[in-house]
Length: 112
Length: 117
Image (cartoon, rainbow over all chains, first blue to last red; front, side, top):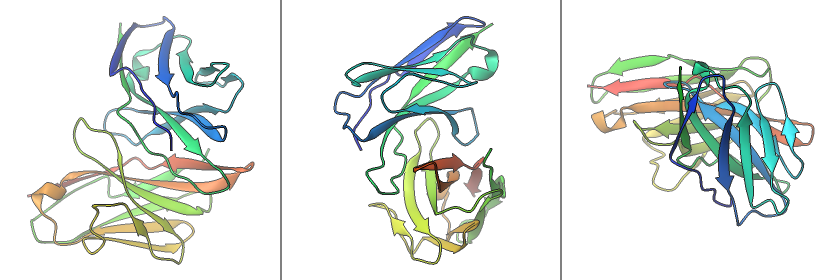
């Protein structure tokens, strides 16, 4: 699977939007962009995924660049419960099972 | 939503003993289950992949005789850490995957904290 690059950490204020960037310049045509987050001492939690078009769900929005070499996870109003490590992962289905390979992620801190 | 459970949530054992961790998919049948390990302040590292009824595939550097994986059914996988040592102390997380809408969706358990004294 292609690699992703994320900032080590970011800070946000409560109730403000947060934009978490991810670079994936070597993404292939069959790579889906997945975002997971991990709260302290818990297993990762699925946030959102997309292929080419922007995606929205109840947790977040995913904005994908036109060339797909980067994407941004958007939390519209950060809460203290959103403080976690956010992982951007490329998953190539290509007809196979595939698995999720985690990088270092971005540690998001939310200030009250 | 799909739920994956792990038992126990934490365990303390003495050096040289074996510990078994269970992973269950509660509301779906998992095509494949994965086991990850996470040391403090580090990311998750994939240890092995297992499909029901077949032998697990271990990642490079993971000792298959030390970390025994049994995937007896579509809803249950177990990881046994044999002859545990303090360096095996870690956070072990399982994940279960199934095919939905043409894509494999993967869900994670809450993790098991293992401390070897």
